[in-house]
Length: 485
Image (cartoon, rainbow, N blue to C red; front, side, top):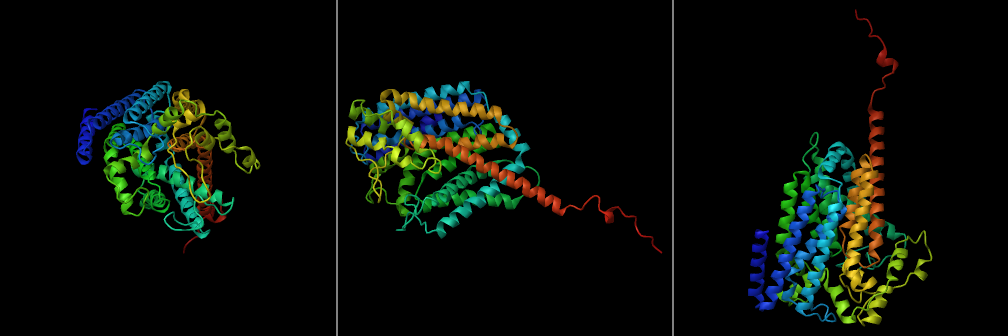
């Protein structure tokens, strides 16, 4: 705790020296980072007391990612939200919203006191017993990820850096959605299970080819998302995945890795903005200074400013509970619900445009505005100020209920696979209301594909063993040796 505060104080002093920060800016920054440090320490304490597994406890992983965002966002007070001038928030209002958000995260962490499983020892026992199955998931997911990416290229889907006709936002046909979905799911599987395989101590004989395949799968997914889709959050999620996977070495190693992430990510995020300009991604002006760079970081790592601005600008009236059933209906696949396009309404844009007069929605060319939606802003859009508190708690509670059910009912290889599948989906905390039901749909899909890989892998191994083994009842095998002269 003291080491974190010393590091945050040094960062605050450096930024203030670079931009000539006023007293309010560094006071708010230190206040935010101090609360972040307290929340981080408390989360690790709860996880240790309940002996929860970082690798197999989805609500714990969700809070880890949320607090990574919250900690990174602590430097935002050195720059008002220049990228969203319609928010028009003062530093005091940003700070008040962040303190309220920190209080909600604390309440969410208290829910973990009711979480009894899965424990770290249960997860380590599963890895030890079903290590060959994990190996098969790694092989299958990497192969599937590579095949989907090759198919997308052959179909004409190009990089977001080029002026291609088709990309993940401009789809050629409905059938291509299945390839895009497979690419996302297999990529997530290869990243999650690949990091576990790379970090876990060796089990059995050496398999350097599998190790290299797991490493290639992780690098392929990171490189594809970072340099092909222009999405930087994969770097953050990879770092978090490696920290969680360090649990397979020791619990202390995982806790230390998370502590270093919380300490180093705020300055690293500033460096990341400058690096993205160097590699060609221009999402902020070329003449950006440190203040506007902080504004860009704030745009992609903020949890509460969007929600706070909606509450203040609309005096708590910018909400509509019908956004929830519309999100649930939108999550039903079009194959099952072909007429949903005529029923599902864009309540999200209606709230912003009619009640706040803010740009929202999208045209065929690009987005009109790309707000950072989180459970806090989703709560405000559904229920106003009450939703700011209730919806984040409800999401953590729902994921906790599913975790309890899976830990109690799943057996054998399905135990770890289903829990890790839910953890992968729960780690994505960004997205508007429509993304919340998709989290659970994606978790089910990831689990189904991982189970299919396990089944196919086991059947293939059985066929290989049967085809290469000598028949025990063969007449030649049982015949007496010929007499020799």
